[in-house]
Image 1 (tube, rainbow, N blue to C red):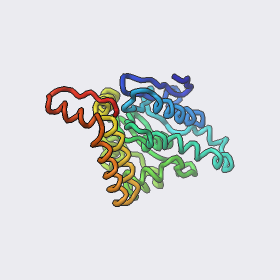
Image 2: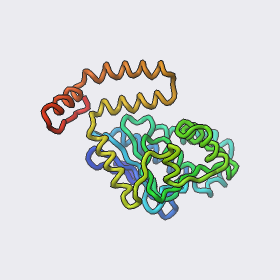
Image 3: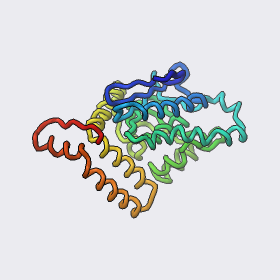
Image 4: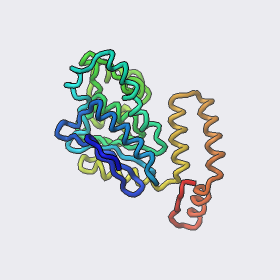
Length: 260
């Protein structure tokens, strides 16, 4: 595996785990961190047999977002040259063929919130606090914040969190659709891994198609979504895994999938 300064990347069976590993700095992010996050996505996609991903963070907090000291070095010219690459680092997780689960504890602010928005499923610890406060510092969210948050929670809630810089706790985040599940803080990784294992036990091609179909439906027309469903079901009905799933059901045994 590649070497990282700000991250830990490992594989446990069919599950890849990326850990933000700067607990001494509240797991703050910076250009070097985003480059590593991009690199990790490429490495994980290339791993043999990966069927789900968990993104978590070391220490008591998921991430305080961008290291504010970095803002002293930023200017419009630098941002114009780099922002598309930074956005792509997060988009890679949304486009990854396998589902990505974010396990969120403590504070999750700014660009860290934008990272979890690019994940497929968000599980929050009871002590989680989520905000996207860029406007407070004279900035606008530029790594998918206005785009993905609006799509996830609607325009009103997105405006409240982004323009008013309102912070939400875990339960409120769940109530507005920002996270999908809230668990006891000391069981966060256990619950995230359980969900990842459940996903990893499903037929890989069907999971891949389902993720693509849902992403497409979230940002396209009804007709486009239905056409993709037609294509994906024609493909899935001819796979070895689909036949294995049905056979295992009738034979009352655990299925064995090969992604074919």
